[in-house]
Image (cartoon, rainbow, N blue to C red; front, side, top):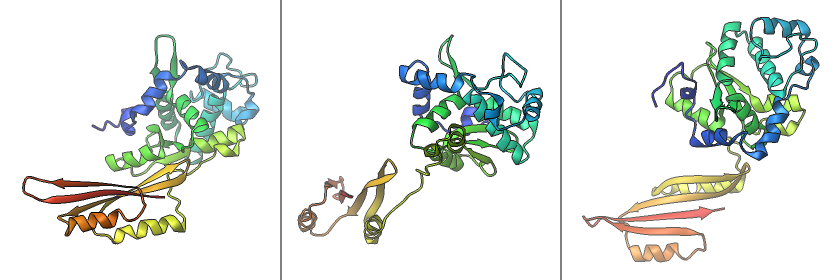
Length: 275
């Protein structure tokens, strides 16, 4: 993927799942209630945890979202407004300038057009994800204000692909939503981190002593390790029949494949699952 520092999408190599979700969002009945909940302007300025003076200042600088009533004393805010104000607070606390925050705003409120009458933004969709899914979602902001919303897995992929990922600010959307909605369960879940007990550690250590081990694949569900699949690749094994007979003696689930190329080279492939 060609990297363009001005292109929002290029900052994160999003998978198709995001575009499928965005295409259905607000057209799907199950999302409409959540959309209404986070976009209705029903909250007073006290819900922002900022003073009138600060809100007025940020409004004068063009940082806040559009509102039909510019009087901060009477203005109502949506959850998306409050989330964005929380992000501004975080960025200002580490010294990011107004012009850089304006750039951040233009990126995360970039509109994804669904049709002529329905538009939504990336921040709205990632708010939905952080609120409803088990993963961790963050906003990353570079020193120049360029930014992107991401989950942990795609951020790690981006760090491998792009040399630009050296210095950036990372703000947890989960943590901000946990504070705004006053729901501790929305906080960071660290689902990208491996958590292994002694049993699973022992299962991993033993196979690595086998020189024929090709890979080990860990399957997680709801943050818990479900199984480990070990793939072995043995070239020209001695006493093939005896080897297969030995492998079949235990009751572990496995797949065994024997391949022979045109030159007579024999490869024994086996996949063993352990729980």
